[in-house]
Length: 217
Length: 201
Image 1 (cartoon, rainbow over the protein chains, first blue to last red):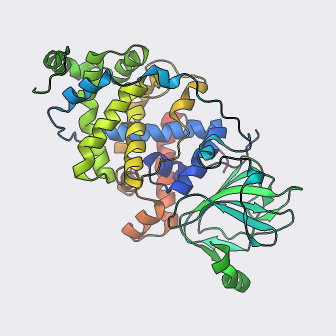
Image 2 (cartoon, rainbow over the protein chains, first blue to last red):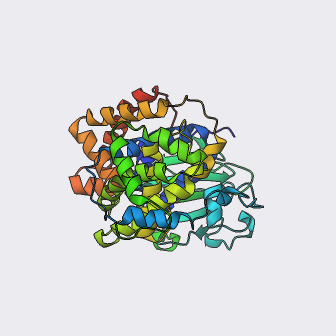
């Protein structure tokens, strides 16, 4: 897969630190699962965590914890866990981390329509921002908006273009309040993206502001 | 030691571990555990890492009352998943850090932190040599300690307190963009250790 748009360093640090919301972490993990370049960078940001773990002043643990753990080891399964990593027959369009939550091909999901040509499917959790799949028909544009926080978008199918560039399958748009954009779907088929924000979007046109309540953003 | 498990000489294991702790190479030890389950090796790793794991998860926000239980769970998973560890892929501290992070978050959010890693490590080619990760790990620690205060602060707030960019911004009363640029600057310095690869964004 030819990936042209990658994760921001600041996002990777937050992911390794465990500081991302579920939705944002899901987009990051999904991109990492298909992008060896970013995966290598994530190994480095994980190593920052390892070095920091070593640097901590140790806390006292209960005297009997080791004994209690050792007593449990014999009952624990070890290697058998790794035996058949269930070969999940799955739509290869769906990155591995997303398969935890999506159990059918993308086309069979119960999409909810926002406006003609735009539909969404929410991830099963709530938070400050949104975490959903977004499906946009060819030639349709998202309303122009900027962000109060971060917005992460990974393309699963089709493509879109905005002020930053063209985003195709596997690419991730990692944006924040420095950017105002209006993504336009430029593929022949629908564009399906996994997106997450950590704060509400800020629509920049009057129309956008008026319809914001029904968009769920 | 009251709860001596049947057939296990725990006291001996503990004494041995404390005597040899100082010079042990943790990644090498965990690498040996990956190949063959060995309780005396495990006990040495436990004595070094369990108190650090507990310190970390308490900072991250696991309630004090649950810290012992979560620490125990993390250390049990070290044993259970040891066969998935590759010493040439990550330092022991890095690998155990990711286990502790994931389990703390699972505990705090009652949701699994989306992961790409542990299982898939085996699929990536192992390009670096044995022991290199450990050297790298020392250099990372040194580089972090040399970061300018403002950059170190956002790194600590991320890793030790699990704070999002937005959360750090409001805590420090600075714009979101400043938080991100401080983190990026810190990352640039740390990248020099890894060879400073450049990527497009």
